[in-house]
Amino acid sequence: MSQRQSTSVAVFAHNEAHGIAASIRAVQDAGLGPDDMVYVLINGTTDNTENIVRSLAQQDPRIRPVVIALGDKANAWSFYVNHLAPEAAELHVFIDGDVRVSKGSFDEIRASLAVHPEALAASTIPQGGRTAEAWGRRILSHHGMPGNFYALRGQTLARIKAHSINMPVGLIGDDPFLRWLLLSGLEPGADPNLEHIRPVPTAFFTYQSIPVTNWNGLRALWARQMRYQLRDLQMNLLRFHLTTYGLSAMPRRIDSLYDQATPLMALKGQVKLRKLAFFYTYLRARASRARPLRAAAWYEI
Image 1 (cartoon, rainbow, N blue to C red):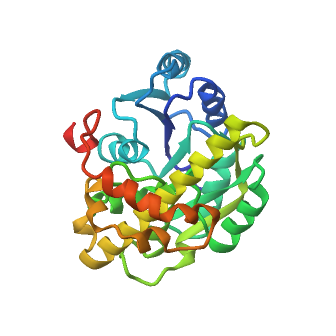
Image 2 (cartoon, rainbow, N blue to C red; image 1 turned 90 degrees about the horizontal axis):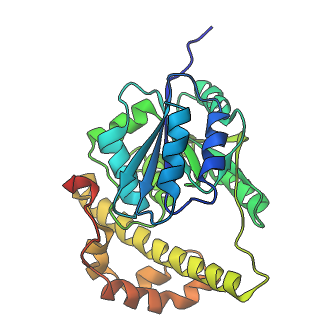
């Protein structure tokens, strides 16, 4: 019988007081071993998230609250990779603090990776939202990797760290960035290999959709679409930059590339409703370049 893989979990929590306890309890039931660790990255939080996590940590020594002043998921991801990720961990799991992972899902991921040695990472399937079914089909057919819940092999994270690959601070969406890098085998410009990401159809995460039955919900939905539009522009800029200059030219802040933005970069990609705002997104990016950060970034700590 093979020995069970040691696992380290990073949970991203920004103002998640309303649901972080349920999220962590789901992690405990997902296949967490007695010696595994759960790092809760409490970044830029202004609500009661920290107190709730500290209370849970008193009951379970595997839970470690990590308070990060800057509210930025990309920065929290890089902080984990550079300062927290245990070198001995054979699996690193990344989870958003507003989702619930399915019971036994870590075991399902380990089993899938064991029979797919070519895979650098594993992705999971959404449940519960209005578009979850269609989203899940796309993940399975295109080997997608939603940022809500995914896992990297320990060897993969070690390669990422060895190449000094860190998410630029301010980058929206770790999922398209990591998917692009992983499918290319961490070689920007290389032909993508879908087998580098293994979707696990028996590992799930549940989430709640934004309500569309009231004005506040519609406003929140539109704000999310505008955020996705900016994410698309950021990824177009980053892919062009790294394909041209290589991984060694990884910017520390995504807004350092905004001078290179053009309206066509904001428009490029699949035609969607949010693309109607491409020129607004371009102007927004150009106007917000190189603004001072509100707190220290991972590389300043």
